[in-house]
Length: 181
Image (cartoon, rainbow, N blue to C red):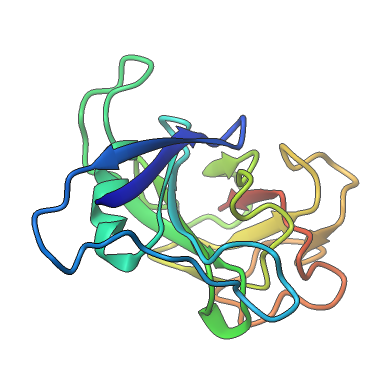
């Protein structure tokens, strides 16, 4: 059986839903730590900033199922094709567990406005982020407090950054909120 964990990003709660596997290679997956000093599992998750849903798979073969799970209907949104705007990683250089962030559209070209906010990265990635990758027109800022309040620690300290291999010692393993512009 393959396992896909589904829940809300705001609550950071993951509920388990078992899906029947169709191949012999989809045996119960085992998780490994992201690094020797981390107790966090190496999950690969997807969060949708519009639906507010997060789904995690404990192996890469089910990440497609996680993308479908979070893109469904919620708050009157019709089934749609969200855009992959960023991914945050537990390890340096885009390695380790990950949280893929989806939005209803690519970011605007302007880098002074806020296009989307993931107010809480959820329990799988909270205080675990070391690097991130951005896509399309997006640039990202990561914050150490839920819902990105003014005055909280952030990387970069002003503005927004493109793909970053290391968020720096001050923000490493402290991210709770991600904002895109």
